[in-house]
Image 1 (spheres, rainbow, N blue to C red):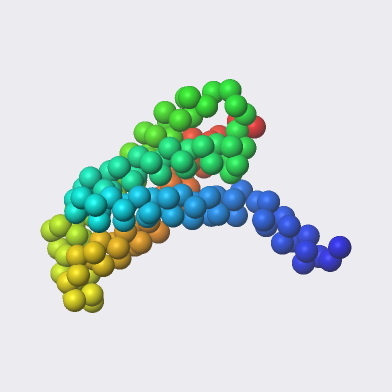
Image 2: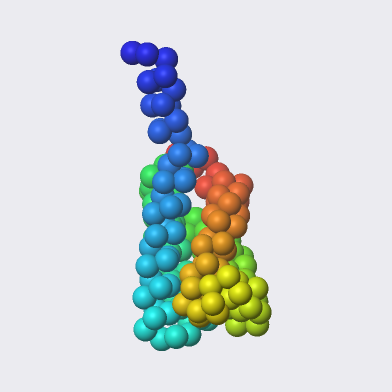
Length: 148
């Protein structure tokens, strides 16, 4: 087998790749639920909150099992730590949604003809980039600490 094949294989099995893959999948879960709930309720705060809770539960199980490959025992404690840690980024998400959608929609709105749905959508994607980076650091350093 070639050297490039072995490097690619190592990369695809790496923790960073798995975190990115499942992080994107978690983001898709979040976006689908947030978009659906926002269109249904027209309430930014409620759609952000409910979509976050759903994404947090999904993210815990894929991170615990696939990314950080934790042993099955002790998962309840890890879940509590994970959930509490994710409340930090939930706060960041809520703050960004409040500021960029409810208080100062013109920051994004000037680029999308002040379409509220697009303002929400753009803020959501921007916040998810910051949140994904923050969540990786929190998970790696505080929650999933070599319990294989």
